[in-house]
Structure formats: C-alpha cells, structure tokens
Amino acid sequence: MMVIFAKEASIPEGSVRVKLIGGVPVMVLRHKGSLYAYVAICDHKYYVLCERSFKDKLVCPGHGEAFSPETGEPSLGKAKSPLRRLWLEVREKEIWVEVPGREVLEELARRTSE
Ligand code: FES
Image 1 (cartoon, rainbow, N blue to C red):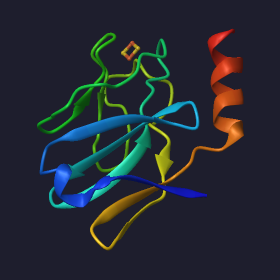
Image 2 (image 1 turned 180 degrees about the vertical axis):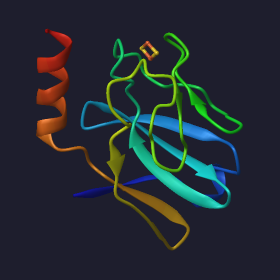
Image 3 (image 1 turned 90 degrees about the vertical axis):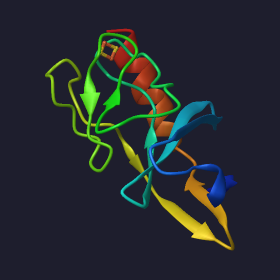
Image 4 (image 1 turned 120 degrees about the vertical axis):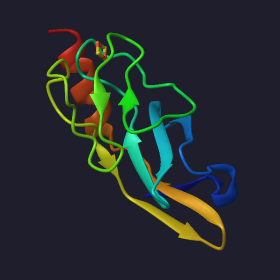
C-alpha cells in the first residue's frame, strides 16, 4: 500500500522530511536530484533519524552513525544494518511512499527488547 507523503517541491536538494506512517518513522530525502525513502531508525540503539538537512551523509543524532543517502549503508560500524529502503513514486507532483509492513514494527519491537 502507498500513501501520499508530501508535495515533491517541499523536499529540495539536501533536505529530509520525517513523518510517522503506520506507526513507523519514515524519511524522504533528496540527494543529487533523486528522492529516496527509508525507515528512519538507526539500529545501533534505535534513535530516529530526525535531521532536516544533510551534506554527504545522514547522521544519526544518537551516536553519530553516518549513512549513505543513496544506499542507506552505515559507514562507521555502529549500526548493524543499512536503513530499510521503502518504495517511492512521484505522481502528479506528489510523493507517494510505501507504508512499512507490520513485519517492520514487529521486527523493531523484537530487536529493541533483546
Ligand atoms: S543510535 Fe544511531 S548511532 Fe547510536
């Protein structure tokens, strides 16, 4: 299932927007002209990536992990896995994103209680 996230023009180059979708924080960002959507949670200690802008990397506010905006891969070895990518489409100047599945919430609940 997809939902409207924002107007395409509201996310200029180097900016990030984060919204709760289906109970999960979802981020959409623009890098080198392209839009990307991820679950906005760093799996080091489960902080939400909430910065509104970035340069070359997305920086976790928890302990500074730096993620690639293009792949979601962490580069400092704190996060255990890449940011989870979500499907994104632009239709008539609106950004639509995939609603994270129930399995995302269940996985987060399981991992944060370990
Ligand atoms: S929670 Fe992201 S670096 Fe620790």
